[in-house]
Length: 244
Image (cartoon, rainbow, N blue to C red; front, side, top):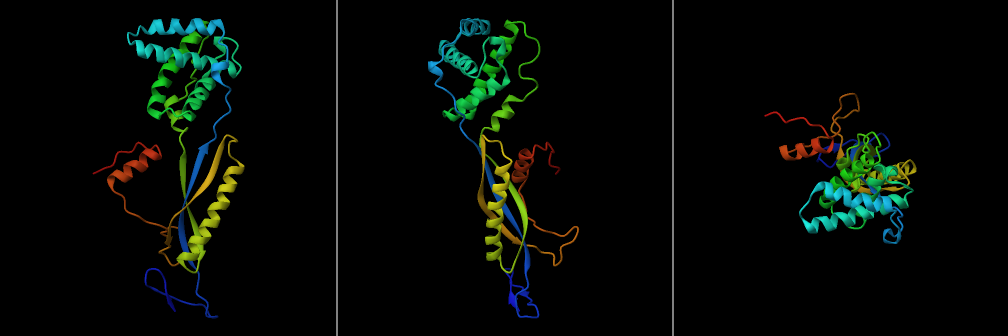
């Protein structure tokens, strides 16, 4: 007999070997985007149609803030340059892909999420204005949620719980690390070429409480504060109010 991590006696089999135990291991993975290749925007000539559209749009907004006006003009011109670099020949060729791609380019050049969202609002209006200017019907955003898409520019993480069979918590931890590395390789094999998956590490290892694995067996349990629970609900996009 020997003690497990909870101080309980762990039986041995007939050959004197310690009987294996089941553990749950929490694994954390990170997904991040690679910076896309974008030519030097300052070196790209802006066609006359694009140049004329910018002051028309700013005039229509009737802003009195000169600093904002200058910043917006520069932002819109650089968006036009990006769209041209990506193949837009006329202003009607600009699309949501150009909008999101340009914002991604801005993100990789150190623009904060807060400012990025403000710029996204202006650029979305500008894109709609361009379509209206040439009489193009439809919504250039095509029902996409731009603010939600911007959030995916940040690194995002996935937590996975896996079962591990081992003779001790230390061995379970080591096995969990091997499993995590293998899963990261499998994820990357099917990932978008512009993103990368990496195994961050093992967050925790817990011994399975039930003696036998069967339907309804308790694998892992933890207590959460109301604040922690609400954070989880937001993460999984479940707008479920907590009942008192």
